[in-house]
Length: 193
Image (cartoon, rainbow, N blue to C red; front, top):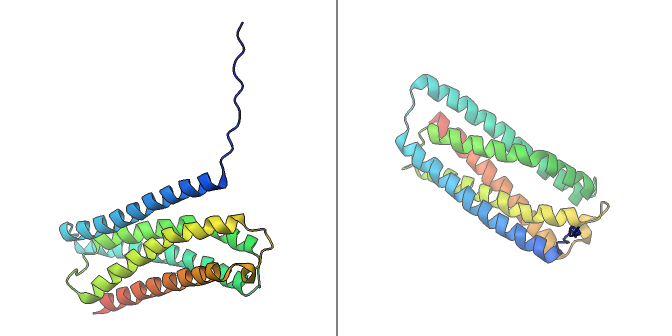
């Protein structure tokens, strides 16, 4: 009788985890860019009758509420942590809880937006589409910071982070908010003109 080899657990180093996360982020950047481009392509070939257009507009607004609402809540928790009104543990919990609604909302926006027949010749629509791409890519970039947050002790303070890390967190939040609000504003203006 031969002995069966015992499986030895493989420990993955931090460096290997970071490498794997970079690869996943690279794939996510590509996926987001492809989804964005497909949304634009679909918008040029699909035309819906008016009753369907109204239903799709409802889905678009619902997706905006879900996605942007979740982003606002994550950023609110980040602001509370940065101003020491809450802990990084609470921010991590909010991020883990709300990241799925962010991506579901964004997917709904891209899908429904493609069916709303945007005027791709309009400079405002082009700016809105660029804002959507920026906020989507920024969302992928933020996954790096989510990983870094997970490594911090539960009581870590924002001010204890290295200045460049604090600046990167703040810059990502500002880019996110500017891109989301710009897309919302242009969408509102386009719908009323």
